[in-house]
Length: 134
Length: 151
Image (cartoon, rainbow over all chains, first blue to last red; front, side):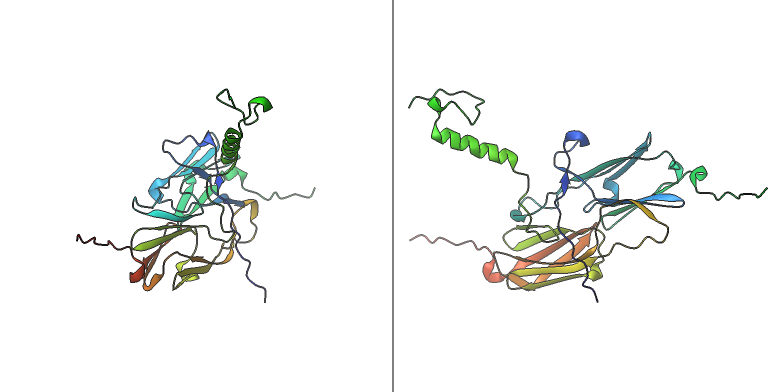
């Protein structure tokens, strides 16, 4: 029986000024999984602390932008004892292949994980082509 | 020793006008610029932020995509322990990954706090992927106002 793999800690990737935000505070790049199966591209992003009304997903000119606002849950009268990570918003941008059907995109945010389904435009789905013998 | 002040100054001034105290201060500033925002992590997952007020400790960790049934929290004296696992669900056959940055696996970590905790008064909530543990300090550890009697 193999021992279950242990999670390793990693520093949150902080972004430089490119993120262009209206609010003060650090901005982090969320970790993502992106995979593709026959009909769609799926993106999973870790966005802990982001509630659905703080999440913005934008797709224009084949650029997908994900932005999740996070406010620090610490109240004024809390004094820091240990600080190992920052509370900050998330931002990441991707350029998509043009094969996404924008009208059919679905997004779900649950327990800080965003699942974004990007169905491919019909014509890009793999089709088998029958080869006729002469 | 006469020192001519020049600002902004490089830490490396001409030897003839070098003021040792100034050099030390400038070198400290240079290292401050090079160091990064937060404290280095303890090297164990998950990263935690701990804060306190007079009566309670607040322990918060970012744990996206974890089932609360997969979390175990225990408290003993002034030590809080957290363990669990994060599952990344299988996505099925015929799936090809373009990027795979998220990891799943087990984690186990304790944090020792400056004050003893009241093990019967610990609350934990998990919302939007953030685990928040609020632990009351043991009565003896709570801050007390001391009355000063005149006379």
